[in-house]
Every structure is written in structure tokens, then in C-alpha cells.
Image (cartoon, helix red, strand yellow):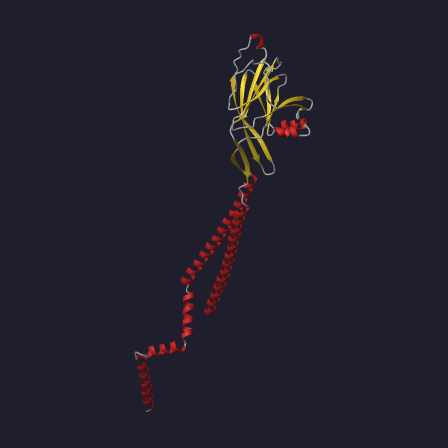
Length: 351
């Protein structure tokens, strides 16, 4: 009797279990209860499983490494560009500072200051010196003979700056000034004999004739002029027409005046008797070329403010790049710590 009752009760208990297991709402109710009781724990476990899954972790690690390399490359590129711009800016500023450019302007004037025309005739004699206007020179009358003149002439004797033992004699003539009326000076020289193979008369031009007349020592003044100005020549048997132009150059510390000239040479048709042709004649004409004075100034095109502005921009870019590098390094460290934490979590789960 007891065995039958036990078997019957076990069968009833088994039937009850089968009915509960096979009921369609059993798992649903259990799932709802689990969701209701432990929602946070299941979601966190699913997230851990998803994060710790090998394919996803591998792809994230690759992306992190890739972006890390890209960010470092961008930082190096920005640093290189900024350094190149700084070097280029400083080099360009120094180049412009040490090599100023020339600015040429032309100033129109009604008259020039009378220049000084220093002539070195040597053994030749000055026969005549006269002022004429409007590019007109009257026909020669008795060439080779002394004639009246109207020029202002100073006779200066001095020792040359390069050969102190050689004494020089200069005839300094007051040059033309009225450029509007085309004032000119016509001079005639005569040379009886010469021991040289070539006969010529040297001359020199300087800015103001008044500098000579107002100087305390005319010999020293002429010596200084000869050491600073160029010398030219005109030959015998020709009429040399010299057209002058004045160039004023302003440098960084001083100012210089230079004469430029254009000369035209015309042969003299000597109609004198044969007995008088032994005396060689020299003819020279001096006038201004045009009423324009050329002014040359050296201008430094390097602007320090532009360079400072560019350098400020470069340093700002370097600062931003350094800040960017700092943030990149912090991000790399944070990613490394997260990777180590996830790895430690995996080991704890396995254990």
C-alpha cells in the first residue's frame, strides 16, 4: 500500500511539473520577472560581452592606432610648416634689409646751380670762353687767336691726391645754369707743341661752383674733388659737345651728387694758313641736357611690422599644435588605460 501511494504521489508531482514546464507563458513570466528584478545587471553583462568580443575589440584597436598615427602626422606636419614659415619670414626680412631697392624720381627745375668745370689744359692755352643761348654758336672769327670772354674762371694749383709730388694746375670755370633758355659755354684752346703721342685735355665736373669760391682752402677742395669725381677728356681738332645731367643719390647715411654726360664729337674744318696749322685747336661746349634732375633713393622694402605679424601667426600655430599634441597624448594614455582595464576584466571573468 505504501509503495502504491508513493508511486502515485510521485506521478502526480511529475505531472504538475510537466504541466508547468509545458505551459506557454512560463518562460515569458520568468523573463519578465528577471527583467523586472535585474535589468541593470543583464544590460551591463551584455555590454561587457559585446565590448569584449574579439572582432569588435580588434577593429576598435585598429581604428585607435590608425587615428593616433594620423594625429601625430598632422602635428608633425603643422610643426614643420610653422618652422618653415618662420625661417622664410626671417630670411626674407634680412634679405630686404641688407639689399634695399632704388627709387628713381625726376624733378623738373627752371635752373640749376652753376656747376664747376675744372679743366686741366697742361701746356695748352685758353683762347676764349663765352656764354651763348638757345643752342646757337656764332661762326668762328679768327680761330686760334685770343678773344674776349665773359666766363668766371679761377686758377687753382694743388698737389694731386694720388701723386703728392705732382703739382697740378686747374682752370675752374663757372658752368651754365639757365636750362630753360639752353645756356651753354663755348671754350677754345690752343696747343703749340706736345711731346705726347696723343693730345687731349682732361676735365672734371662738380656740383656747385660756389663751393670752391666759399672754401677756405681751394687746393684742398680740388684735391678732395679729384679723389671723389670722375675725369673725362676731349681731343684736339674736334668740337666736343658735352650735355650734362645731374643725379642725386640718397643713401642710408649720406648723400652724393654725380654728373652724367652725353658727348657728341664733330671734326673741325681747319681753314687757317698752313703756317698756323701747327697750333692744334681744341673746342668744347658745355650745357645741360634737360631741365630734369634725377633723384635716386635707396628704400628698404622690409617692413618689420609685417614680419612681426607673420611670426605671431606662426608662433600661434606652434602653440595650437603643441596643445593639440598634448590632447593627443592624453587621449592615447586614456585609451591605453581603458584597454588595460578591459583586459583585466577579461582575465577576472575567465578566472
